[in-house]
Image 1 (cartoon, rainbow, N blue to C red):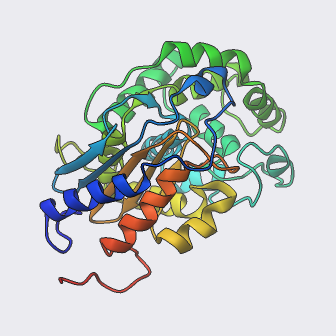
Image 2: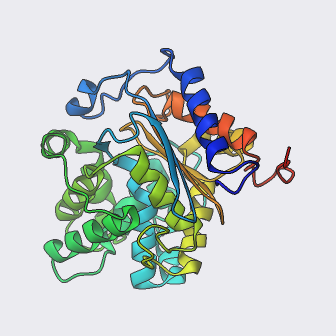
Amino acid sequence: MTDVAGGASRVQDLINRVHADCAEPTLGVVSTVYPALSEVDPHLFGIAVADVEGRVSEVGDSRHPFTIMSCAKPFVFALVCQARGLEAVRRRIGVNATGLPFNSLAAVERDPESRTNPMVNAGALMSTGLLPGGSTDEQWDVVATGLSDFAGRLLSVHGATYASASLTNSRNRALALLLADRKALDGDPEEVTDLYTRTSCLEVTAADLALMGATLADGGVNPVTGERVVDSDVARATIAVMAVAGLYETSGDWLLDVGLPGKSGIGGGIVTVSPGRGSLGTFAPPLDAAGNSVKGQRVARQLAGELGLDIFGPAPSAN
């Protein structure tokens, strides 16, 4: 994104200003879905921008670790498409928006083949079950290594959050059991749920999210390590599915306001992708009623507009 209207120094100046503008307390509350998440400091706030040349600009708590939660969904989907084939995964999981909450059982039941979307929990559980490997240990190695490759560094699980989530993820277990009952889930539902939960508890930073998104923006190549993580068609498909349902039932409002594909997580992160240019990673724990970071959405709106990144808007001015 540093190729836009003024280069890296302008991007740094801009994110510094936006961070200051958005730093005051806002509406929203930290997630209470898992007890460990409710203990996160609501004042933490970081912004990072990474371009496809591997340059990163950041401000605030951009290196503060937090659990990736649902921001993992697009990257797991990409890994599964890379391993199983895009069209096969598309036919199996579905790519259209459900129009229902992210953890809806009804969304599974209303489709004859239980197809939903890989950005909601049911579809993400199906993605997890499709990870390659002859055992859950092998599948875990695939997903942990793959997400680390997207980030360009080794990611690890936050043990306390994983323990907390494992004790209280009854809704996801119910979804996995329903999918298994409908013959729509590969693997044992308890094992798939555990793998899904463990993946959600990998620790990242806003800078990591920015680089993970920039890897998608660069056609699947990590712009810092130079490693190809997924093929370009898989990266494109992942960005497209993010645009459809990355912010759940508010995805239409997000796309209209921001004009870029994004994915949120209840840990307070949002990753926003500008295809061919780069990515924005934000971290701010207070969430709105749909489970999306309040400050993260505000930052994305401002930066997309001021950097001229809106994919539906005019080309950015050089002035």
